[in-house]
Amino acid sequence: MAALINYENFNTGDFPVFPADSETKGALEVLQWANDHYGDKLIYACSFGIEGIVLTDLLAKVNPSAKIVFLDTDVHFEETYQLIEEVKKRYPKLLIEMKKPDLTLEEQAAEYGDELWLSDSNKCCNIRKIVPLTDVLSSATAWLSGLRREQSETRAKTEYINKDNKFKSVKICPLIHWTWKDVWRYAHKNGLPYNVLHDNGYPSIGCKTCTAPAFNADDLRSGRWQGAQKTECGLHLS
Image 1 (cartoon, rainbow, N blue to C red):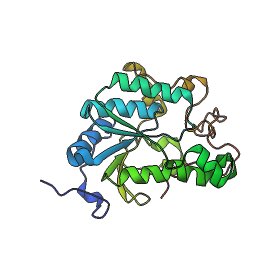
Image 2 (image 1 turned 30 degrees about the vertical axis):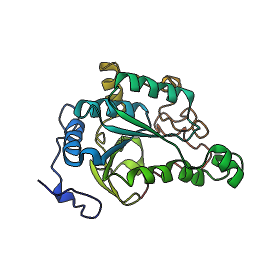
Image 3 (image 1 turned 90 degrees about the vertical axis):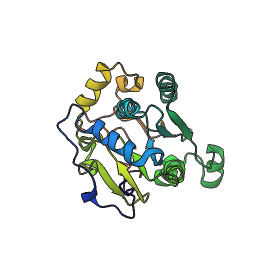
């Protein structure tokens, strides 16, 4: 049996070459390999945007009992929570964990002031997203993400398998070659549930405190952290 590839022994030459020209542009093949190689040491951190729904469906084909974690910041849209309940019903065997931060919103306000997302969005993201994911990944060797190269300049060089220096882990991104049209084509073809906010000008959906409808059709993440010099919550920055 091949040695488990982890952060410490990461070497790009140890991975198979995945077929970017397959029916799923390599996604299903990457997922099958990741599931076979990492088993229960693989976790999917899902935000339940449309890419997340597509990746969840593909993952369920490979492992109906896969582990999925949602970083529940307590300030998500109600539509997001409703979608998660739909997903649980559609894929009853999936192990979906709602991971909350150590601090409640009230405790955070008492320590850092009301609406920290306005006064220091980076600290808020750290408390409510980065620290919880760090905790989750402490028991995993690799994690899945729905990043696509098309999404932004910061994601344009993402590979299928990545050495994740931020979380000292292996980050696997099966959808890197998918376009926005590919994602929606798959979702409609397979009758997948999705967040209704996508139909109302929200191509990228995060916390309701920091997400607005996109104002630039060429930038799907233009509705995130409007007015701030920020394009990422920090989960995908080294």
